[in-house]
Image (tube, rainbow, N blue to C red; front, side, top):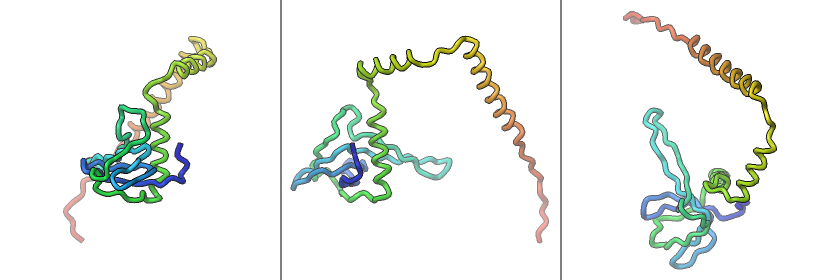
Amino acid sequence: MLDGSEFFVVLKLCSGEQVMAVLREEDDDRILLETPMVMRSIPVIETGREHITAHPLCQFSDDKIYVILKKDVMFCKKLHHIFVDHYIRIVKEHEESASFVTREKKRELLEDWEDAEQITVEEAKKRIQMLADLLRNESQEEEERTITIVKGNDTVH
């Protein structure tokens, strides 16, 4: 797990990908990276801004260590300190959101579910009705927010 004392870098690969990672070692020909995350920016036309996404360098492997040839790297720079916490959070979220659940974890989840509070059918219906009332109130508030447009004239001051 990352503790913030590592040497964080951002790389641009010859393939065009921008990668945030921890630089562990390097020699004349290779770079050893830990938990590299590919950063992609997706333009949002409606707002005129960009949305940044992050995912592991190889989504189909659980390896955290990668050796990259320097000839495949356009540049490697120290990651700006503002982005370090963001990078650590991304890595942590990815590690916690494992797609596959081990049998032990599945057993734990089932045990937790069995220990959960048992509610009656009447209580479930009551809770559903409360949620429906909340949604109905929200939709009424949206309907009440009407906009009145007053057409202007051609007067010049």
